[in-house]
Image (cartoon, rainbow, N blue to C red; front, top):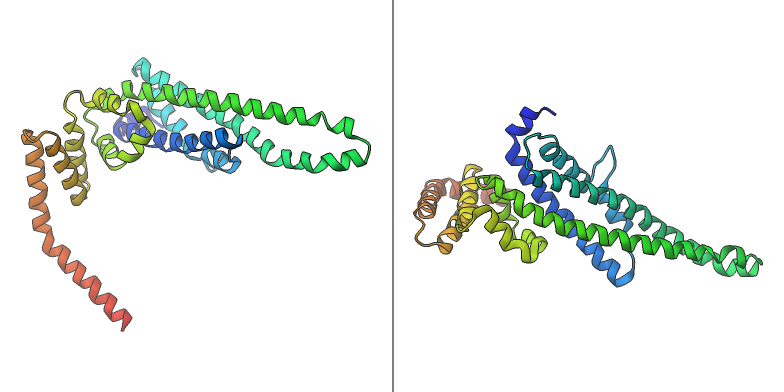
Length: 274
């Protein structure tokens, strides 16, 4: 993958690593809650998150995208290198967690099924020490969960710093607007820091950029929603008002076509029912 191509698609890559990080974090946090409650994580969930060489999962793709965007850029700021490092470390810790989860999920029940037959067969003293290994696997998982959780927290801090370099990225703004609930859930108390690091004292900028990006993509209803939100944040913002007015004009111009299309679909539906 050439550096020139990466640079040409930098905004998409930056959007993708934020999106995928939020999705990965959400899945892992759910597994950590499960581990705190039951002492187990889902092998299937961690396996699917990683994927394989021929069918890469979400975390693997996140790692690769971070490498392309952050690691191979000689001019990238130190925070970008640190973020790439932390994401890669999460990936490899999850590989270890996957193996431990497999042993716990499959070998622990097999051992319990062996305990009574071992007593009856007179080999209890040989088999019983195996339980120590299961305990060590549980301890190993606890350490892995703690390390991954620590790394994810640090990644959020690094994202807050790195994303300041993406102030004019419309694709990132669209993501922050369209997946706002997910981003808020993942960043928690750091969410306001994230937004202020990107847009400073002009939070409506995120919604304006999102509206412009959605408008460019032909998603007029969502664009209007974003522009309206920008105006609500700062009623004195003339740029937000202008964007909203432009979108409303486009919606008016396209409304007859929408009605016609809706009528056509309804007619076809009635014909098929008849």
